[in-house]
Amino acid sequence: MTRDQLHFLLLNIGHFLDHLFMLIFATVAALALHREWGIGYADLLAYATPGFFAFGLFSLPAGWLADKWSRDGMMCVFFIGIGISSIATGFATTPFQIGLGLFVIGLFAAIYHPVGLAIVTMKWRNTGMRIAANGVWGNLGVACAALVTGYLIDHGGWRMAFILPGLFSIAVGLVYVFLWRKIAATDHAAPNADTRNTATDTSLVHRALVMRVSAIVFLTTAVASISFQSTTFALPKIFDERLQGLVAQISGIAATVSETGQTDFATTVGGLAFMVFAVASMAQLLVGRLLDRYGPRPVLMAVGAVQLIFFAWMPGLTDGVALAVALGFMLGVFGQIPINDYMIGKMASGAYRARIYAVRYVVAFTVLALSLPLIAFVYENWGFDTLFRIMAGVGLVVVTAAALLPRKLPAPDTTPVLAE
Image: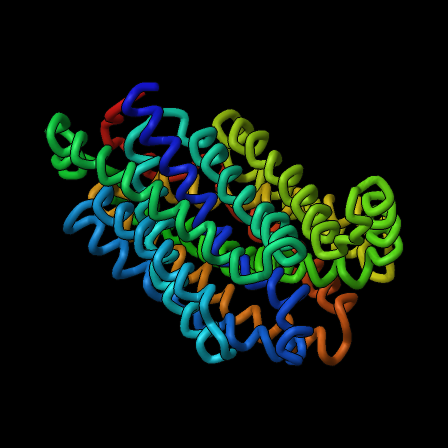
């Protein structure tokens, strides 16, 4: 494996871990803590909210530090810091302690998106496919949060779901430190790459077009964050309620063939969520290819339409049909993820790219945090059917916004590419 291949692999693992850490608690709250601690699911969501605010708000200083100091250095801080925080959270004994642990996890998790994506879009060609591949790893982190946590709840307890990934992240961080030292010793072109010429058209028409596209990027970022959070965080609970017959059937079959005869309901729910997340994440590879070929406008309209159709279809469904429709709307939700990052990567100046990504993720993750009280309020008062209808409205907003995009993006980034 070449150094560039190892670098890209570690960045992808970082995206995987970033989303896994942020969603471990979603499965823990849905399938373990509300029973073990006797606290309602909606009440438990309050303890995750500060962590998601940190996930968003600390993106801006993380991006600033990356541009001013070192992007690879910040990635080392990410891996080791989030690993230690997760291990500490695994020893929490009160809701306040677990909320504090989730806040610190969110603080370190905020580093990845502005820093990792800036490295990906600066260093390699085929931006759409690189972002898409990186996005698949992130969504597999979402999927494995449900699968691994569900398994460990049944076989080791929820605490191990925080501790084991934490140990793995620290190990990866040590590998990244070694790679960073190699890069610093042998690659003298990278530090100056951001300062090269990125001349752009500064006419009033051009500026107006940039402002229009930027407004659409941040609008769709905000509304997409609502649908992303409402699905990735709540899907284990949705499956726990809507797939009871299917889960009982699968768990019963598994118990019959196992030596212990144990019915692992949490494992089954986590496994079904993993299957949906993993399959849906593959949509990003298709989206990445379509972005490089056709541009963002038609692709964004298509994924918005998929969300609109499948969210509107979901209310009232249970078991196998609900599982199939859930896969449909997750294809739309995950398919949208690389599109805004692609547009920013094409328009942003290299010298400020990490900070621009940081602003994008401040918007995204602040909305993620605000979505948790929305999920809790809607669930407590009307149930998930109303939430699905709200998400269908979000899909309509995405389609409408996409229709306002120009056919060609303004001011493509002319920063020199450093590696194939």
